[in-house]
Amino acid sequence: MGRVEYNKVSSDDLKALASIAGASDVSTEDYDLVTNSSDAFPGEPTLPEAVVWPESSSEVLKILTYASKRRIPVTVRGGGTGLTGACTPRYGGIVLNMMKMNKILDIRQLDMQVDVEPGLIYDQLNKELEPYSLFFPPDPASGKSCTIGGMISNNASGLKAVRYGATRDYVLALRVVFPAGLDLRFGARVFKYSIGYDLARMLVGSEGTLGVITEATLRLRPLPRNRRTVAAYFDSIEDGVRCIGRIRLSGLEPAAIEFLDRTHLRLISDWSGLSLPDRECMIILEFHSYSRAGLEEELSDALELLREGGSVELVVPRSEREAERIWEARRGAYPSILKACRSPIIGDIIVPLSRLLDGVMKAYELARKYEVRVGVMGHLGDGNIHANWLTDRRNRDEWERALRANADLTRYAIEVGGALSAEHGVGVEKKEFMRDQHGEVVDLMMRLKEFFDPNNILNPGIML
Figure (cartoon, rainbow, N blue to C red):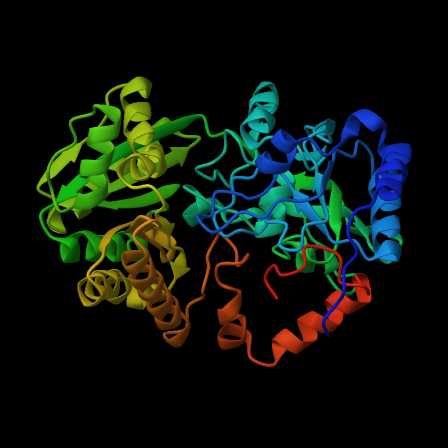
């Protein structure tokens, strides 16, 4: 798409927006502009000129139609927990904050489905589903704050993706509003169908560049009756990573396989007060089952594999509370990093399982090359590596070296048949690698965007 000249938000525009959404849902106050200027990406924030909180699909349609006609850029925002700058209003304009569209519209227990608005918080959804013995599985680490709309826009996943998959695997139908003046429904409320192009799945991961999700029908899973957790410690990174491969090939089906290296174990211990063992790495496994006997057998087999694979210390919680403490430590990884350094670069790549150990060791190699600190963690059971570069943006030289290290690791992932992102998305951070990943397909993506968003007002400067 060619260069677009955008208009500033005028006083007349503010009056028009207030007539659509109501004066109380339109703001130009400094506090609202600043708090809607970026997500958790450590790049430079950009202030919008106005923030609007729509409360219905019809309001979203009127706002987008108006903004497109006036050529005012619109950036869509959910919980603001993203790590790539995907909700940074790069060209000012309007931030469309979806947090007031946060209702559960319908829970259909027998269908194992739920209809929701995009501003609903992930953890809140699962809390409401508990009485129905159902849950929405992706489980991102930001579950206390992230929204369903943001998860769909980034195809989020998390701790349980190795067994349950990513958000895309649970999106059955969407209602989406487009700047071209369209309010459309995609998909079907069934678990499978063969009825033409699957446009609902195409919109998952589009990072708000095509349209604004206003409703979603999600597939749910029955809550497992039983779960067991085990933490295994290793004195060798190689032993720990290779053991993950052995477990994947064993026929066991863990719900989660998490990896933390010594750097993260120390950071988490300092942040949380937990006394985690001072080992080279830790693997956390969780197993789910509806049969207690089957669960214990699976756990026994896993412990044997961990011992054979070189684990020097095994911790098997005897209670739900003890298990939760292990997961509290894992969920504390990100806040512990923020305590340790001002502006970390949170890496996110995925590689084929056959290249998993190579990918982990590549991160350490690049840290030595560029003389920056790195900690490696991630959902290694599905090849998802988080190389977290512990840096401070105020030290410009160190920051630039960390950016180069992260870029080299991203290129490595693409070269070995992996992807530049597994769950965080592209945003501002990695859009320069889109053509490396997709080649000429990027041109097709841009043509699709031009169809749905002819004046390129929606999330401009993001992903493409």
